[in-house]
Each structure stands twice: as C-alpha cells, then as structure tokens.
Image (cartoon, rainbow, N blue to C red):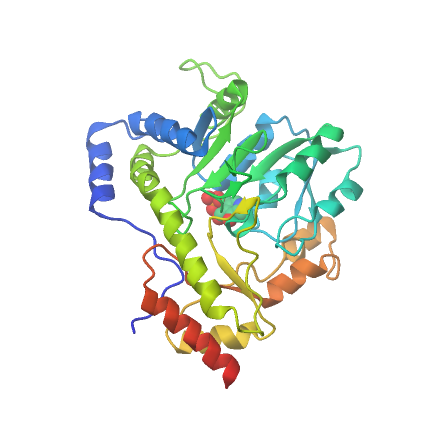
Amino acid sequence: MDVIPPANPVFDKEMEEAAINALRNERFILGESVDKFEEEFSRYIGTKYAVSVSSGTNALHLAFLAANLTVGGEVITVASSYIATSNSVIHANGTPIFCDINDEYLIDINQIPSKITKRTRGIMPVHLYGYPADMDEINEIAQKNNLFVIEDAAQAHGALYKGKMTGTLSEMGCFSFYSTKNMTVCGDGGMVTTNDEKTAETIKLLRNHGQYPKDVHSMIGYTARLNTVNAAIGRVQLKYLPKWIEERRNIAKKYYNLLADTKEIILPPGDTKNKKPSYHLFEIKTKKRDELLKFLKDNGIICLIHYPTPIPYQPIYKKLFGYKEGSFPKSEELSAQAMDLPLFPDLKDDQIKYTSEKIHEFFNR
Ligand SMILES: Cc1ncc(COP(=O)(O)O)c(C=O)c1O
C-alpha cells in the first residue's frame, strides 16, 4: 500500500487549461474570471453577493472592518480554531474574547452571555472541521445585544445548517481557499459572502485600497484582491465541489461504520437533524493520540493534528492578553487528544479499510 496522505488537493488538466487561458487572455488582476467566480460562488452558497479576496484571513479582516469594528471593540469567538480566526480581529484593531468549546468541538453558546461587556461588538462562530455552529442561538444572543455575527466558514464550504449553507447564516460568511480546504484556488484565496449590497461594496473597496472610480480613494484599504488566475482555477474547482462533498460524506460514513466498535476512540459528532457537515476534517479523539499517530505513520498513514495548542495559549496571546492554561479545559482536551484521519474525495475503499484495520490493530496490541 502506498503512503496515504492526509489530504490530496486536485490540480488537473481542466484547471491547468483554465489557468493558462486566464493568464493569456485576461488581466492578471481583477480579470473577468474574478467576477464569474464570485457570481458562481454566491449562487452556490445562496447569498446575493460574494466578494473574493486574497485569503481567508483577509476575508475575516475586511469583514470586521466592513462591520465597523471600532478600536478596542470585542469580538467573542472560540479558543479552538486556527489562529487566523482571532488574528483577524486584532488586524482590525479589535480584541478577541474566547469561549471554550462544546461536545461538538464548536463555540459553547452557554458561555457567550457571560463574555458580553459594553465593548462587545460581535460574535464570530467557527464552523470548525466543516461542522456548523449553533447559529440560531448565536443569532438570538446577537440580536438581543445588538451585536453583529460573522461566520468563520473557512473550513465549511458546503456544510448545511437547517438546510442552509454555512456562510449564509449571518451578516457575513468568510471562506478560505487554502490548498487543503474542500476546494482550493491552488494558492491563497478567500471569499466574503453577504446579502447586503453596501457590505459587498465596502469589501470591494477595502480589497483595492479604497479605490473607486480609478484614482479616487475614499477609504484606507489594502492590496487584498484574488488573482485572476486563481479565480479561474477556483471556477473549475467549484464545479466539482458538490460531488467532492458527497464523496467526503460517503467516506465519513465508511469510517463511522468501520470504527464504531473501537471504544478507545471518540468519533466526530456527525450528521444530526439540523446539521449536515461537509467533513473538511474527520476528527477522532483518543487518550493515546500521539502513540496512534506514530503507529499509523510507521504504517504509511499520515494523520495530522488540528490544532495542538488552543489559540489563547499561543505565546503571543499569553503575552498580549495574559491567558493561562486551565481557562479552556475542553479546548485543551481536544488539542491533546484529537487527530484527523485521511479524508479527501478520491480516497479509495481499500485505503479507508486499511486505515481502520490499523487503528484496530493498534488498540488490540
Ligand atoms: C478556521 C479558519 N479560519 C481562518 C483561516 C484562514 O484562512 P487562510 O489560510 O486562507 O488565510 C483558516 C484556514 O487556514 C481556518 O481554518
């Protein structure tokens, strides 16, 4: 059996041709493919507008600026995520305030009310691993307290909450097209989705130094545009995304069946009546995580850890905000015990079976 990688980004002939075509025939920056990609992405997600940007981090950063996050304004988010989640608040001159996670590894909504202060401006749930956060409850808290909600949907293209796509469930959804995401632009890229025209216009200005019309700058903006060539590749990837997500769901089902009897591991929460995850990552939890990871690696199965340290315990967050271990026990437990199994659309049945067999073998030794 060849080595099984954790992820396997696709770059095929069709994408290569789209890239070359865009490079030869369009402007490198803000070419036609960018408009088309945005149109097609907004149609897929189900918002009126989608504005592409140069990364998922920039999508969040510009979203906070568009939401008028003021200096020192607090945004309540979650301790267990990729660091870009909360860095983006700091980029926008705000302060991230962390909640611990619930049993679905998502922001614990019960902790949100006690974190609200007079400086709180918004809430940013993260649909981590492609599992939708509890959006109805979050929106209700936000409405009661006059707060904005911005979804970090960087890992959640195609995840469904009560039949609606993540990224449509609040003022703005922010996506990443980093290489290993459910779809990529074969480079860095991101998207902000919204139903509000003014917000979409503001993001468009912010990504292009506040320029409109040419040589007139009405706000301090950034160079944060998505390159035309990446948009052209993204258009092809988007065409296959629904099929890829179905394949991810089928692979997840197979893992559930093959691993259901392994008492030593906790499987991810999976589908519920209201939530249909997109299985960006298939996260398992075990007290023997590090040993299992090594055993699988020795057997040619490469698994990863997302993320070994909760954000507040990163050195810079400790230094800036004085966070101490023990404040987010569930996030700590996840960081210590979670690992993701290989999961990508063309993962073969025999690879899934082999991985599951090796996991059984590890615990039966
Ligand atoms: C949860 C989360 N938020 C934000 C980001 C930032 O996206 P990017 O890497 O495209 O800047 C990522 C991805 O890396 C992510 O996983």
